[in-house]
Length: 204
Image 1: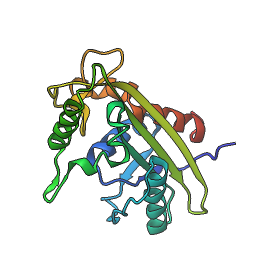
Image 2: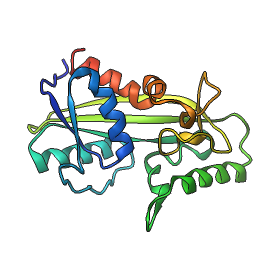
Image 3: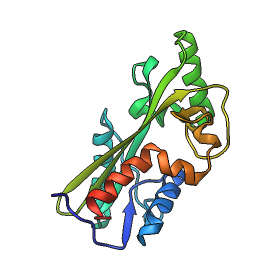
């Protein structure tokens, strides 16, 4: 039996404004107020694991230890088949620069590496999301979601964040970057992980 979350305010262990906005929209219908790590002045822990679950655990446990509150952490990324699953857990790292994250640079690198490999079309990929809900007593619940699709070029759309402008989900002829938030939040990897979370730990 999965543990139920019975509060009305949930700490989201992220400093990523895009992720926080998505979470805020997803939780709004449930009457759960969302507060982000930056709002709580939490430090960003170093993510040292080579898998999504491990890095989500680092973020969730760090937030719990700093606040004494239950916390939800997300670790997500895009896995490209022809790049042997890269960038995967290093998705954000590919965008790092001395002046902050540059996802146009990261998307360009992704496409150039596919071109260098002469990868055949369709260039299959999937977005992955792992959610870790952690409590102060050490209990944890893990939920995962995936969104399959393909990498396209050039970049299309200004919605969303991260690699959204080069990811075209299966069943659509537009990218996540061209998709309105309501539609994306219905089919995204994060939405699917969130649906599992709600069914498992919110009883709704």
